[in-house]
Image (cartoon, rainbow, N blue to C red):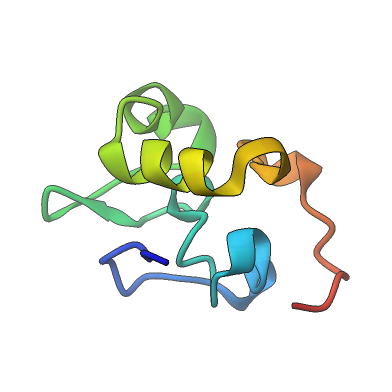
Length: 79
């Protein structure tokens, strides 16, 4: 299972797509790196992220359980 190569993660998304600290949900985390550059908020970077190979790989691996929007995540759910 692959994880995002950035180190700017949050515990709020622990367990999403079976990752730790948002490592498999980086498109929803503000300030993650893409091409070595910090990105903006989910709303500002979404159009770039949907073309990201990492997001596509997670989508393929998760299938029907894939979550794109942070609004669809139960942050109280334990990993």
